[in-house]
Image (cartoon, helix red, strand yellow):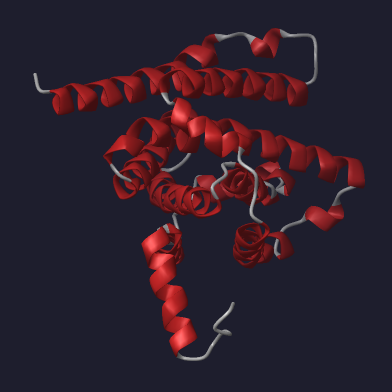
Length: 264
């Protein structure tokens, strides 16, 4: 077997084993039997899962550790924050968050943030890191598709309809691609974690009946496809702009048209 082929097999093995441990083995640990509230049971489970992902990153993808400890560039962080605010503000405006007390809002935000930390460390940290040797585009695309397919299990264990889950898979894959692009552009995994946590926050303030009606109904395919396409295009632009040669060409172009000072 060629060295390249062995590397591919190793990457696939790591992804399969990581997925098995993350979504099967960890689920068997009886956190739900601990004498604490359900909120803290989930926080503890998510923390444990995150630590396993961090260990896997450290051991199998040490190059990816730099994105966890990276110093953030203010300009890039500012651009990313504006993008996240633009994308997620409508969902907060349309949510029921203002009908809750401050302590409930804080708990919902913390709950969603831990979901983001756990899933981003696994998908954008470990899975992307395992594939990064094959190029940024391949790593971003395959890790995004993997992230989307992970949601297929909601048909069997989440009580969701086939229609809703199918659209969720597509939406999650596009979201995963944009999350990877934000990480590549900013150089830090904490930006996609922020987006992930905030995107999951509004649903924390839905009633049980409202949530059940939504996930068991028919998907809004037009909205799903438009949003997915927008996320993919935006992600592609961010990845394209993260390339040093591309940035130099872009800067030279805007200087040529007098959009910035020659010294800027």
